[in-house]
Figure 1 (tube, rainbow, N blue to C red):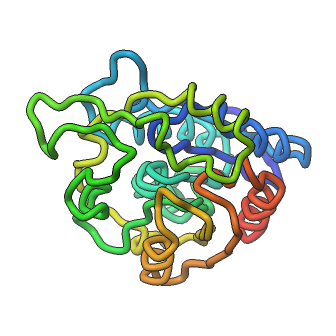
Figure 2 (cartoon, rainbow, N blue to C red):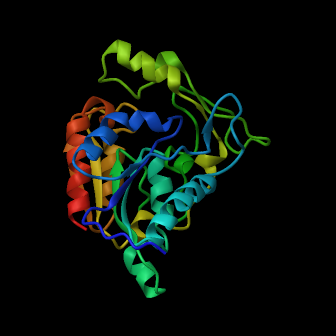
Amino acid sequence: MTIVHSSKPVIILVPGAWHLPDAWHKVKHRLEAVGFEVYTPKLLTAAKPETPDCTWRVDVAVIHDLAIPLFNQGRQAVIVGHSYGGIVATVSVEGQTVADRQSRGLLGGFSAVVYLCAFAFPQPGLSLLSMLGGTYGMDWIDAAEPFTKPSRPIKVKPQLTPFYSDLPLDEATKWIEKLQYQSQRSFEEPSAFCASDIKIPMTYLVCEGDRALPVQAQESMANAIPGMKIRRCSAGHSPFLSQPDFTTEVITSAAGQT
């Protein structure tokens, strides 16, 4: 086994629903420029034209397949979740923090979590759908009724997407064209492990201009989680695109807490 000694944790950037990893490119490049090793895994619940009928559990498996070999080399990691990616980040941490792994005689582990206008559940048993009030009532979502069998992919209506409200029109159009379909079940599966169970440093970036996840909902989640450090910015739902410098600073600050 190769043991890697590094003063910097690796950074794992988890995208939100419908998004591909390249949405992180501005922040990824900035983090790499200051010496971080950065990974941007592709989540299996977002695909096009065929979307797997699966829950967030397959995305957690993607993160573990990436992170655990790094941990076994002695590496630590900061995991960053955007929007839906906050669910994936939270569950990925269960049993895999530095202290958790040390207690089993293992190396490495997650050392911090960062939520970017993300779903961070303060209690167990919640799902993304339950946090939305139990319905897909937003005018920008094209979805079947909850728990439809067989499920069908959830789509974003391009002309109504709220994700890029603070980007120039040409840049917003580019990212809208890249949006995938999202597995319906990924929104409906509840999680028994929640952010309040996490014992490593956590940071929540509240995005005050967010038109997809209202600021009040972000604040409600962040304030309900013990030990959560709250940062704020004026960005919309995609701060990694509209405010990449500040987003990078939030992540590097969180990495420095470890």
